[in-house]
Image (tube, rainbow, N blue to C red; front, side):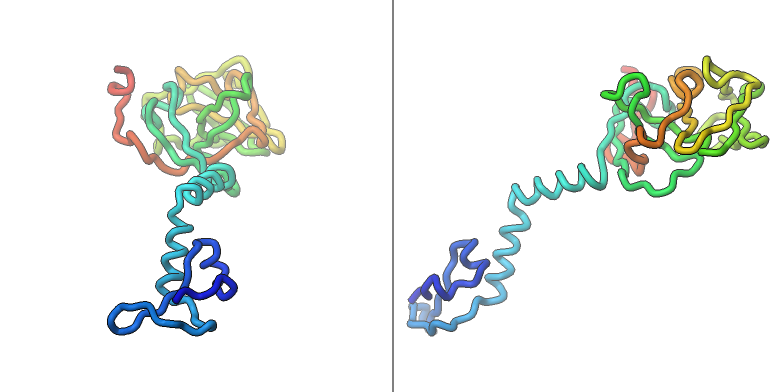
Length: 216
C-alpha cells in the first residue's frame, strides 16, 4: 500500500512521490508508517532538480552576472592576437591587474560599447613614447611576446611623442596590439579602474580564425 502523505520526506513532497513496498512476487504489500525513503530515490530526486532546465538557466545566469562573461571580438584593434569573430571567456573577478594583461572595458566615449585592450601602464608609472617604442619608468618596454618587431608605437593627441605622462591612482594606460589602427589611451587618455569590466581568460569558439578569414 502507499504510505500516507504525512510520512513523506520533504524531497518526496516536492517530487510528489510515495514509498511503496513489494513482496517477492512483485505485489504491493502493507508497509509500516515509519518506512524510510531509499538512497536511490533520493539520488533520483536530486538528479531531477539539478538537471532541470530552470536550474541550469539559473546557474548560467549567476555565473554570467557574478563570475565570468563571454566576449566576442569585433574590430581589428587587437590584430593579430585577438581576431574579429573569436569568442573569449573573461573573468569579472580578476584580482590585481599587471602590465600586459588584456582586459575588456567600457568605451570612454560611449559607455554602451565595450573595448578590448592591453594594459601598458599601471597607477604610478611614468610612460613616454620615443622613436616608435614605449618606455615605462625609464626602461624600454619589452613587447615581443605579443608584438612583431616591425610594429611601431606612435603618439596621439593625449600621449604625445617625447612627452612623459605619470599615471594617477586608480587609472591605467591601455593600448591595442594593432597599434596603427587602435583607438586607445594615446587618443582618449587614462582608463578609469571603474570602467574595467573583466580580464580576458581564454578563447572558446572560433579560436583558429585568421585575419584573412575574418576579413571575408
